Length: 409
Ligand code: HDL
Ligand code: ZN
Image (cartoon, rainbow, N blue to C red; front, side, top):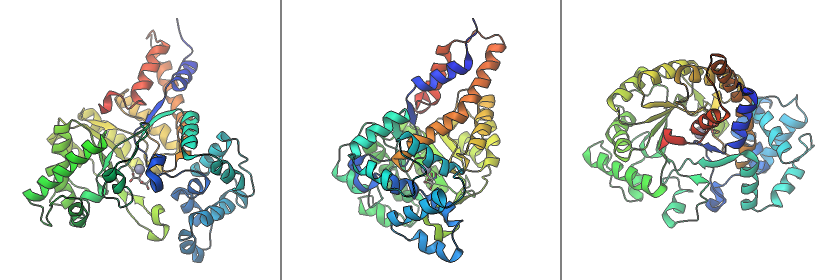
């Protein structure tokens, strides 16, 4: 008995609570790390970059140095009130969020949005966003060496179980020996030299903090010229410390490759860009470390098909998400199609990369609006090929791919 595939896919997404495996979200109990509400949402660095394009060049630096609330007023005026229609993905996202909250997206200012947000406790706002977004859990991006975040983990705090830990390694491993003082300040006797003492102390840091965070995986972002093997310091530390600990602890090593940091520092957190990575390096890493599950997200659109093929060659490579500049409908559609065609359900199609809690209200509705039709097409092909498809089949697959499932455990 043929099923209505479009309805079945819609039901599967509606009945599944998403596990979002990469975000920069933190619970309200982490104070300044918790970002929510209109002023943070409107000053998302994607929108600041788009506003900077609409300002006279002479005003760009001053705008990017404004206090958040003043910056939000400028973004609102430039991109939503006085400008052309807000049809970029980041602009559309704000409209989706305001609509979900019952707010007028064509308001002249942010007063209504600010009032709604100020009238609610952070805990109630968090409950509202999780309820409306269909997200069950979010994986954080945790850095014990961050001066704002570290004290919370050192002193202890009440962690909302909807927020799960991930050990982010950029500040501990990159641009060595810059991390030496920060690691020593919290008790790890690393040395400037990349010697056995340093390797042993970094492995201790990884073990300690994967434990403290109950980390779902270890993550690091890497530049397009990251090479393996190499005597480059980051590559050496990945080989001597991260991959062995991932193997021994049986948790994934996530690599997010292709980011070129601060190509335009004037834009601050919006100043990063991208480059293509030579995936021969990934072949060598996956071959050398067959027991490690490599969660891979790569920033260049041009590398996506090759990532799928490389994942076919090495079962310990799991592509995840449409990261950053790829998180746009036209590219999400292309990447998801080639992943399903080449990898079936053995991938994690999406993550939100949300930085502000409110973004959960658009990043997932926008993604599913683009991803669902890909699944409708594939399941229709399956049913038309003669497979007696059931609704439960589709629900099981969606739960695996969007549930943090056994790809991570
Ligand atoms: O390094 C990362 O995890 C990136 O996602 C950056 O945080 C980036 O600024 C971002 O927010 N992309 O969406
Ligand atoms: Zn991120």
